[in-house]
Image 1 (tube, rainbow, N blue to C red):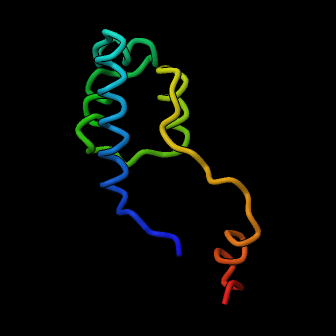
Image 2 (cartoon, rainbow, N blue to C red; image 1 turned 60 degrees about the horizontal axis):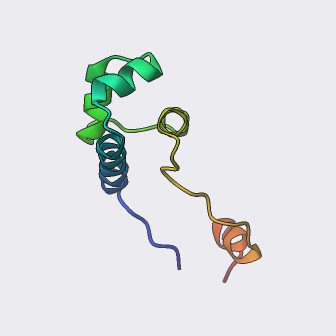
Image 3 (cartoon, helix red, strand yellow; image 1 turned 90 degrees about the vertical axis):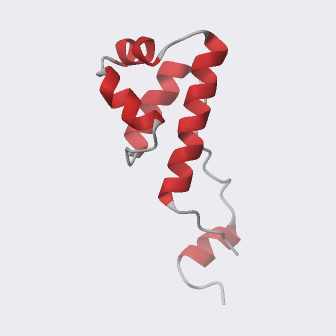
Length: 88
């Protein structure tokens, strides 16, 4: 069975990953904002977990940081049948 996580928990995990990567690379939130052509305030909301992220935003962050923030599970027949309600 697939376990659901609340979006705030997932956002916090992503925020931690971003902060960890910034520290690891010696970058600041302001550096990331400049690289992404966004405001530092916008980046700050993300790393505080106050921003509900879209897939597009996550892809932008991944590109700017050169990391993967999430992974889409490998295609499997079981996953497809579960999501369509035919897995019973």
